[in-house]
Image (cartoon, rainbow, N blue to C red; front, side, top):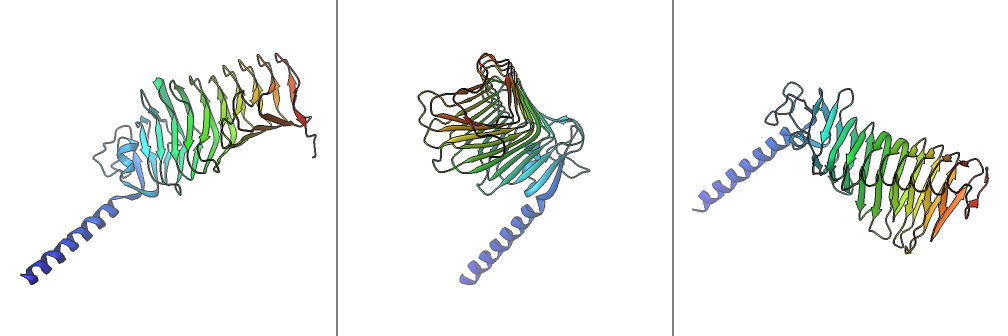
Length: 316
C-alpha cells in the first residue's frame, strides 16, 4: 500500500511539473494582435489574437504585444509588466461604458502604452485608470471623449512614476490628467513632454502627492483651469512648467491652492505663454504658492500679471 501511494505521489508531481512547463512555454516574450485575428490562436505573428485581453494571458511578464494591422482591440486590464504597441498602424480601443485600460499591477512593474487611440465614445469612464504600478509610460497616444472619469486617472496608495510623451488628451468631460495618492508619505511623479491637454474640464489636475514637471506642452481651451494644483491633504502638490502654452481656458491659466484644503499647492513657471484666459492668468489661492521667473508672457487675461507670486528671477 505504501509503495502504491508513493507511486501515485510521484506521478502527481510529474503531471504538475509538465503542466507548469506547458503554461510557461505558452507565454511568449512577444505576441501579436490583428483586426482579423482570433483569441483562440497562440498570438504568434502568423496566428495573431483578436484583442489585447486575449493576448495578454499568452504574453510573459516584461513582454510585448504588437498590433499587426488596423483594428479595435478592446479594453484591457493589465496586472504585470508589459508593453502594448500600436506603432505604425491604427490600433484603437473603443471604451463604451468602461475604462479603456486599467493598470493594477505590482508596485515593481513597468507598463508602456504606445501608439494607441483610446476613444471613450462619449460614455466611457477613464481612458487609462492607474491603480498601482512602479512606472507607467504613455507615448504617442490620443485619448478622447471619456465622460465619467478622466483621460488619465492616477489613484495610488504608493509611489508611482507617470511619463507622458507626444500625446493628445482632449474633449473629456472631466480632467485631462488627474493625479492623486492617498499615501501621506508617497508621491506621484509625473513628467509631461510635448503633451496637449485641451477641451477638458481641467487640463492637468495635480492633487495631493503630485510632483509634476511639464515642458513643451499645451494646456489650452479647457473649460475651467489649464493647470490646477490642488492638495486637499497634508501631502503637498507641486507643478513645474517650462516652455509651454497656457491659453484660452474658461477659468484660470494656472491655479495653485483651493479654499478649504489644508495641503500646500505650489508651482514654478518659466518661459511660458499665459494669455487670453477668462479669469486670471495665474491665481494664487488658499495655501497656494507660485514662483515665477520674469521670462513668462502673461497678458490678455481677465486679470493679468501674477499677483501673489514670488519673483524668482532668471538665473537664481
